[in-house]
Amino acid sequence: MESILIIDDDINLCPIIAEELAEVGYETNFLTGGENVSDYIKTNPVDLIYWILKCQAKMDFRFYTKLGMIGVPVRTNSSNSLRRC
Image 1 (cartoon, rainbow, N blue to C red):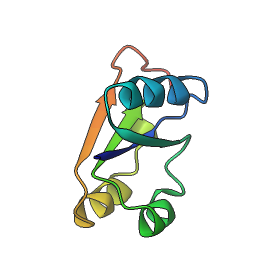
Image 2 (image 1 turned 180 degrees about the horizontal axis):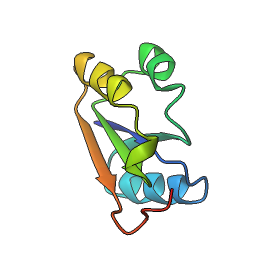
Image 3 (image 1 turned 90 degrees about the horizontal axis):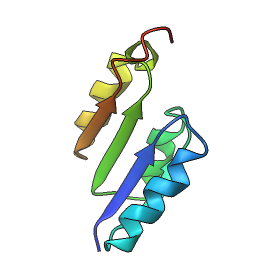
């Protein structure tokens, strides 16, 4: 079974997305911030990271690049309508 790690700062949305993906056959888990991603991945291998960005300014490009170097695909989703972050 493929595993997806969902990262979103919306604590209410994470479990909903995880449940929807689990219903179609994915093993899911979520974090409500990007701070612990590296530690999580070291002990819990994943096939995909789905990072939901509420504000582009919150994304540390160096950290994002580091995630790409570990060999796990990272899919991002952002909202341009939330420019006041």
